[in-house]
Amino acid sequence: MSNNIIEEKNKKKQQKIVSFFTLGCKTNQYETDALMDLFYNNRYEIAEFDDFANIYVINTCTVTNVGDKKSRQMIRRAKKNNPDATVVVVGCYAQISPDEVAEIEDVDIVIGTDARSGILEYIHDYQNNETPRPYIVVKDIMAINAFEEMSVKHIKEHTRAFIKIQEGCNQFCSYCIIPYARGRVRSRAPENIIGEIENLVEQGYREFVLTGIHIGSYGLDFDRYKLIDLIEAIEAVEGVVRIRLGSIEPRLIDEDFVRRLKALNKVCDHFHLSMQSGSDTVLKRMNRKYTSEEYYRAVCALREIYPAPAITTDVIVGFPDETDREFEETYDFVEKVNFSEIHVFKFSKRQGTPAAKMENQVSGELKKLRSERLIALGEQLTEKYNQSYMGKTLEVLIEEFKEGFWVGHTTNYMKVKFPGNLQEKLAKKIVSVHVEQLLGQELIGSQIASND
Image (tube, rainbow, N blue to C red; front, side, top):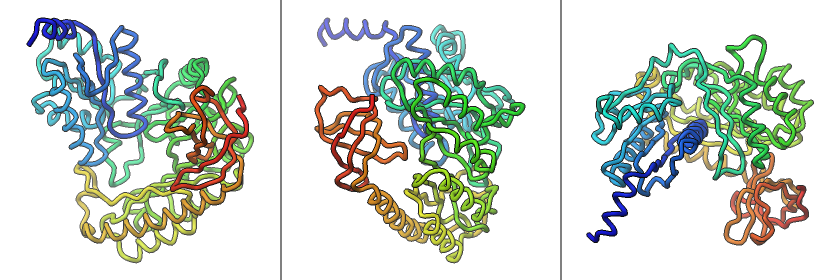
């Protein structure tokens, strides 16, 4: 090895370079962005995950056992990039199974789903031999009552800005490990949310996605302040063009919410309304807090406000003891609701949840058959919804230029692209597009005008 290469390696070892890898949900991505800000503000260079870094931070997911496995794979991959690096594992997997994570040979620091804002201090203590390896910083999450304030001031790769508004979940669905990983509901102070949005508006962001573990519970720990109050406050921020809600539940769509939502102009007509099953008996075993009829009433209420909102959902097939009749109830209900898109998941045992211990587990073969049927139905519904926009003019927030096309999304989250060139500089602008063709799930058209 030449002296120049050795000198370059030694030089890199002295630099402050950090790399991140995120698994799981949009909330995890927001939290990674917030951690990046901490390092950025302390003069760290942010590197790609497969590049050389002195510190690797893996933000983990534990929704399924597969999530745990992927987390372990990324932990090992980090050390291969730089055997001398400090590997920090944060997030849900670290919270649920800190000892298991700590036993992985390449792990140096383990941080759960709270106290992440102290990550630089933990790294300093570890690197200065002030703490043993592995250094575990995992609290009793059920004893945490305050929202851990972290904000994002610099977003480099996203056109829309994700804003975390709350933490935790009180629902305890029988198949879900997340309440044990995230704790009880803690809501973020409205003034901190508004302050973050105002800063990002100054950077040119137009669309804001409200995210969290269970955003419908926002304000549950406040005195007379709830999600619709926050949405109204965000609507009043000058420069905000779109407000998009993350996943919500039907019980949020009550009379007061609908009445006040009607008066707003910036809330996107795209609602991911969590369902999981269209069978009331399965919903009861899942410990969901609504019936299929209540769910349908919520959908109808949204369709009274918006002419053709995108209603999307998640469906779990093969939940323990799901009979043929219960599956058919779900299939028929999906048809009745007429979703614009559904995401179908085969039930997977998550150790530590009541559903994992339930009797009459459905066979893998039957889950596969049911999944295929429901996916096929979902594809038909999506095509029908997309076809309804042929020949129409849509407002598109431009996100990227790719292979000769400008690409973006509508308020109801339909992907639209049209030919152009980079010199037009349309990124982050809202453009009117006349839809002329449907290719897969992409609407293709021609630009009419830029509205910025």
